[in-house]
Length: 451
Image 1: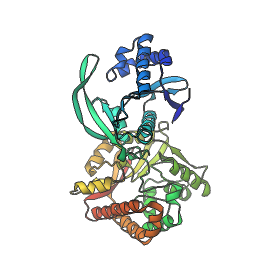
Image 2: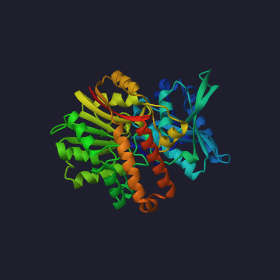
Image 3: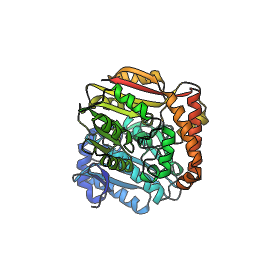
Image 4: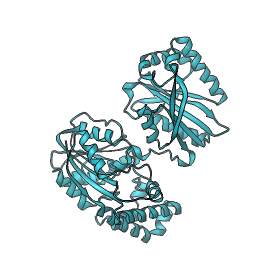
């Protein structure tokens, strides 16, 4: 059986009638977990019913009206993804999933669904992909959010599970909204702050960064070198300290921390080209033995044991995560007693915003806007004590103005590199960001908290 890899040693492949015994065993193992949400958890009770179910999908697959795939790990069927409806002529399909509870939190399902959405849109020409979920199923809703789907509403009493009618939330994704890349709810590097070699290490981009930041440490977002050193000082980062940098991008600040303080650093980011560039940078700067970078989804359970780090830093990334409380809880878990968090959030609402302004800010991907008070409440609920909560909006205004001016100076080179629509869109983003920061209607706050 040929498997398409989806990470963590798992793979995706068609689920066919000859898998009936395996499918029955898998459903039986997770029946209690699936029963509240999945109708077939109640109807598949023996090999004959399992085989009949798979035969119906096989016939529909041949007719190109439904499709079914399993997810295997170490030879065991642990879940699946299906297209319960697939209207190739109309360009509309629905996608649904199930997964063993012990396999959740690894990002397997998000990656598997992303692959199949990409296939449906790019290969099969689908215009609309729908996601239906029970309003009580928070894990299912989180996957839809991570994939960049939009919530449309609730279809009341839309289907039957275990002889009970249930509501269904409807989420959707249109072909024009799909990039195929990991969405920003997973901590990916923004298209605007691209850290791939082609858009980060060219001479023109290096020149732009130097003019924007003054001192170029390979950063992105609104971080200056002066601010970064101040944060490391707050947390007393030094020799023997273990630091986790969430959303590490191309690794510039993480590597600089190791070089200047002697600490050990792990950077985590789900943008694999950025991770590869960061790994090369650590080697070039001679700190590879103390600095490593991991490609992983920072919105899920982190791939580290409890009490692994002394400091967690997250610079201008947290507003791309949909479930902030869950992310902070993970930081609390992997911090040692007395461990510290330094986190900047440039999505703090401190004034009136129009829908147009929100749309321009959101043009770079999924964003969560919040208030300073809400941030503190979430931190407190997670067991993190806030030491300071500083307004650092000046950094945004300073960097955005200089960045926009530098890009205008190198306009022709950047248009050749990015294309005119991208160049113009990024300039609009910077102009809007500068204005909102100057008027203190959308602010950036830095939180320093202790576990």
